[in-house]
Structures are given as C-alpha cells and as structure tokens.
Image (cartoon, rainbow, N blue to C red):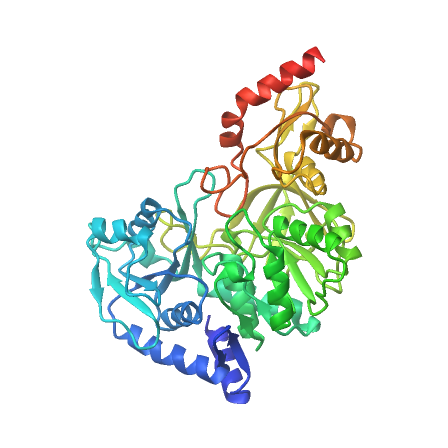
Length: 511
C-alpha cells in the first residue's frame, strides 16, 4: 500500500486543490484528504490496537478511516452492512478485532449492533474529531492473538464473505497483493482518461473498495460518494434506475461498477426511455456474475460502454478485464499482467500470483501467499487469449441423457428477456431443465411463458426450459436465497420450491 500513499502525497503536492472525494454536501481536495489521513493515522499509531473492524455506509469518513488505519500499520476488517448481529459477532471474534469503529452522524448505536455491543461488552473509547462516529474497545475471550496471524506476512485487510454457507469467512490480503491489483487496474484504465467514478456498491465489498476507491485515488481521479440508495441501489435485490440516471447526470459520472442485474435494469429502462442521456459514461465495469452476450449487445445498441471482467476476493477482486483496446463480447477479457491463469484438465480456472495469504485460522507460518487459487469456475481461453467463464464446476447439471449443462449459461440467456427478473435452473438426472422464476406481479403467466419460449429458441434442445414455477418474491439475502455477492443459493431455492416444481413436472407429463 506504500505506493498508494505515495500517490496520494504526490497528488496533494502537485494538485492540492484537485477534487478527491465528492459528496452532495462538500468536496474534499487531495490536500484535504492527505491531511486528514495523515492526522488520523498518527492517532491510530498511538493506540495499541492492531485490528480495526469498520462499520458504516459509504462516506468520506469510511475512506479516511480505512486509509489512516492501514497507514498506521493496522489490519482493517470491513463489516458488511447486511450482516446479521450474529454474523458481525462472529466476524469480530474470528478476526480477533480489538477496535471497532462505527461511523454514524448519530449518537445512537445502530440497531443491528446493539446486541453485539451487549453480548461482547464493548467499551467506548474517546471519539476522534477527524470523523463522525465512535470507537469501541473489543475485549476478546481469548486475549492471545493468533500465532499464525503474526507469523505470516501482515494482512492489511481481511474481507469477509458469507459465501454459500452463511458463516462469514475471512480472506486475508497483504499490502503487496492489494497494491499489485491497484497498479494493474490503474495501468489498464490509463488510456481511457477517466474522470469521476460513482461509488454505487458498498465499500465493504472488496471490488468497490479496491477497483473503485483505491484505483481512482491512485490515478488522481475523484470518487463520488454517498448513501448507495440515493444512487439507485435500494437493497440487495432492488435497483432504481431513475436515481442512477439522475446521479450520472448530476455529477457527470465517467465510470461505475455494476452487477449484471443492474445492467439489465438499465438496458430495460433505456428501451422505455429513449431520450435519457448517459453520454458522460466512458467505462462501465460489470462483474459478479455471468452476463449474457445478448445483454451486452443490447448495451452496445444504447451506446453503453460496458466492459465485462472477472475476479474473486481470494485474488483481491480482479483477474481479467475487457478494456477499450482489447474487448470481445462474451469473454471476461484478457488476464491482467499481475496474475497468471491456467485451465485445469477438468476445465477449472486456476489463478496463480497475487493471491490471498489464506483464510483466517488457516494461515500458515512462513507463507507469503497461497500458491494457487482453485476458483471452482469452469472456463477456457480462445485463440486470442480472451478468457471465458462458462459456469461453476460443481454446479454443472448432468441430464438423464448425459448432457453436461451449465445452469449459469441458461440463466444468463433467459435474463435477456425483460419479463424475467431472476431465474434459477435445475435438472440434475432429469430429461429436461426446470426453472424457478421471479417476475414482476404485473407480468402474467402467459407473458412469462412467451418470454421463456423466446429464450428457448436461442438454445439447443437439451438446454431449453421445459417446466417452471414462479417465485412469489425476489431471491434475496433476507429469504436466504442469495449470497452476499448476489449469487444464487441453489440448494435453498430447490428445497423451497421442490413441491411446486414437482407439480409442474406432473402437469408436463399429462399434457
């Protein structure tokens, strides 16, 4: 991270008045940012704390605390805002956090944190004049720090994801790993000459934290910051495109990171509102799930500069990316120069270089990084070196006719239809595929059936949807049908809708 701090200092010296962080209320220059980070890092240096957990929405203070703590040599553990009280308590104990920073302009403790503070008997420390919020001393039951945590190269960040089990798992990242991806992305985007970046995804998400904030500040650009709902991200399954459009126009945004469902919503919105002006956008990065080639082509028709990428937390967020000079629709781009990728004999994508130190409690003494990351994703390279992700190795459906089918492939194709908002595909050991579909209440079954029929015409017969049922509500974190990064919890969905799918199959058999 030293290179990032040097970049901040250089920008502050050469362009002191250049905007660094823009909010609806104020603008922080590079000189202001450098001063606040330096002052707060000195305060943190006087503390005996080594690991700081950071809870708060997207604000200037979040960025300042994050950078200052790392500059002071502390490990930062971002706390996802969607975590339950039990998950937050697990995170604090698992990471052996000794200082919790709660960012809020109110003196009241956020409701989700109240049981955590009571259960763990957290003690308030003196607050700082450099940010709005409170610091709590965390007294661990096991006061002795993990020996392996000390023995390996010092993690500067531990990012937690609930994954597929719901139990948060900590990915430990070194300064060198984060700096490497920050530099690689900065170089990849240099020719695009980008201006303001809209921080649409919560900072506790590693992708926005690094590819959004660190890369922009490293390049001397500005980040536009605020509560994500004012920019359109209302929840983990609801995106208000009108608010997004307003934010892009108001702040003249040039880059943003989107999830596939957000891009789908934007394309559908533009189809109904042809006069909407998003011409300031120069680079829309899309990741976190497979994007259908049809959706990318539709994006082109609306002149949206969409560039698909691929990565994972274990590799500090980004592994490959399409860029203006090297772009191929359907691929996730060419591998960035800071990592190497190979395809295993079973088709799995394996990443080497710039990897995590390991998972919390699995760190090994003397280990600087995990040698190889087995991603669990299936993929291949084309003749020009573009990487394609076709699905998950363990999620490949084998039909009763012996066909191997990636559910993500079928789902991405189906999501090209505007009527289909979410879909989960099943069909293991069955002669056909079935689907659980969420659509808006105003969409009739007949309209949905027509949309499925259109989607099926683009697929071979063995990958067509033959039966389906509707989900009464969207897949979400609340009903445990999505992971924290928006991926389907297939086992949960299948179990919940098993009866409906069985009824649908019986109706199909008697038709």
